[in-house]
Length: 350
Ligand SMILES: Cc1cc2nc3c(=O)[nH]c(=O)nc-3n(C[C@H](O)[C@H](O)[C@H](O)COP(=O)(O)O)c2cc1C
Image 1 (cartoon, helix red, strand yellow):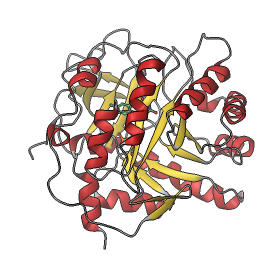
Image 2: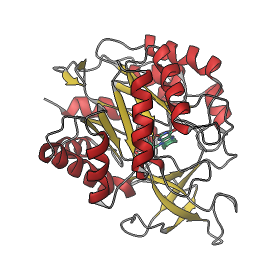
Image 3: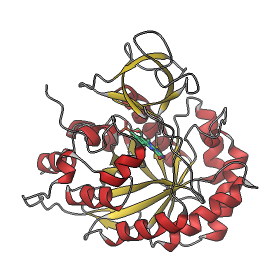
Image 4: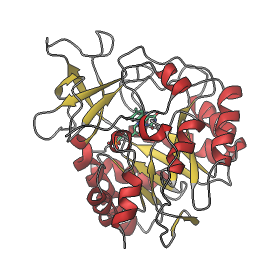
């Protein structure tokens, strides 16, 4: 099967993608009308179809405009910070070929440039960001480009080493709020800053971050981007602390693994022996998290929204996430290599 040209080019740097992308279909205007559907509600907003692209592949307003144009109605602007932060050098994206199911226990996976279906990739950027004076203008432009029934979600995170991290998260939230992004998403699940554990597993810290954000920006829906929790007791503990404070969860981010090349060496270089895997190999984990979040929502009498993320590349995958309890579904890897995925899902709906 010939792979379509991805809208993010894995062979060139993040900066070159930022300046010259998107590519492939996303670089061309759509010349057929998009099938109109009965709108749904997501966080009390009327959305054409609760399907979109999660934080990452949509680097700036040019990418968001293309995604809206191709029928993705919930588009997350790639995670920003309160200060400039450089991207890791190439490679940032590689295909990975796990043997069987990828577990959550740092498996070693072969990584190369052989992109084929069913596709799993690793991505390793270090959460780059321009400074707020650059991204605020651009994010505001992305927000303004939404057509009826479409929304930008502004993803952000705090940076370690800038005083109390919760203060930096709150500052980032305020800066995103100023762009008029209708939904905020705090990323608590990217492995970076040399952190040995992900922020979302430090429940006391998450509570401080959420409180600080909500005190600073009380009147804008707040989502938390979570990693896969294999310990359900930990997930319950998290929900007990912040389940009534936030408006929803986006789950999941990547599963960590150790990518190696054909010579058995770290595929991303000696300094990056671990990285996040996404795509086909993690769908089981995304679905499992969504099912548990939906079950706990009912059992604990909470009413947060759930965005299901992980390994979605067909209309059936979209349906599986909806059946698992997701109020909205998103695809990063799938959409990158199938830019017409939202159109296909819409065509398949009655
Ligand atoms: C190229 C790329 C960049 C990403 N960057 C971010 C990011 O900046 N912030 C974030 O929360 N997640 C980021 N992610 C993770 C995705 O949002 C998503 O959680 C993950 O890829 C799983 O979805 P998928 O299987 O559809 O790819 C990135 C993913 C990809 C593929």
